[in-house]
Length: 251
Image (tube, rainbow, N blue to C red; front, side, top):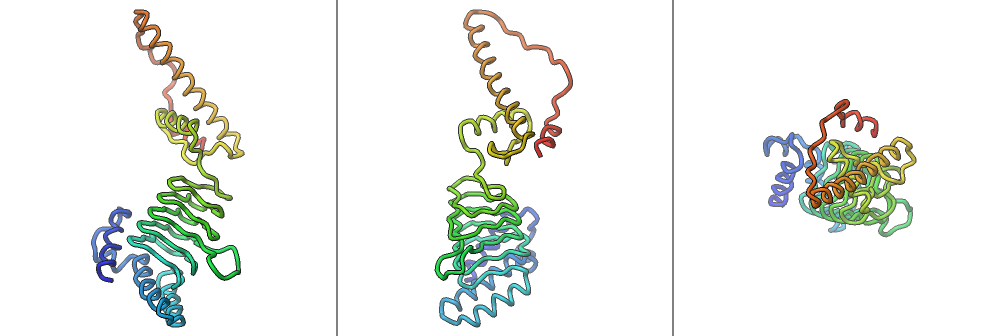
C-alpha cells in the first residue's frame, strides 16, 4: 500500500507544475486524500464490509469534496487535480495514469443494476466539469474537453468536446487544416467542421484556401526552378498578420 502511495504522489509531480514537495502533496492535495481513503474503502467493500466502506467514502466526501463509491475500480497513478465536485459511480472502472479535473462526473444513465458507469482506459484525461455517462468505454489516451457531455464511446487517442460531445475532426482535411493553422501562428483546436458556427466555417474556409494556395505556389516554384527561372522572394507589404486577433475571432 505504501509503495502504491509513493507512486501516486510521484505521478502528481508529472502532471501538476504547482507541486513542490512530497510533504506538500501528501498533506495539501485533496485528490491524494480521497484516493488513500478510497483504497481502504474499496478493500472493505471487497471483503463485504459494505456499510463500513460506504461510511468511509462519505467521510472522505466530507473532507475532500470528492465522492468515490467504494465499489469503483481505480488503477495506478490516478490523479484528481483540485477535485471539488468529482463524482465516481459504483461500477466505474479507471485504468492507469488517468487524470480528472474538478467537477467531473463518471455517472450512470440507468437505474438497473449491473454495469452502468463508464470505463476509462489508460492515460485518459477528463477536463473540468465534463460529464461521462453510461457504461461506455473511453479509449486509451483519449481526452475529454471541459464541460463536455459524453454518452457514446470515444476511440483511443481521440478528443471529444461539446454537448453532446463530438469527436474533433481527425480526417486528412482536418490534419492539413491544423498544420496550416499552426503555420499561421494559432491553433484551430476544438473548432470542428460540424459546428453550426458561421465564424468557424469562415475561418475553416480561409485556412483551407491558404493551404491550397500554398500547395499551388510551391508546385509553381518547383516548375519555374526546373525551367531555370530564378524566383526572388516577394517584398512584404500590408499590415502585419496578427494571429492572436484571429484566435480571438475563433474563440
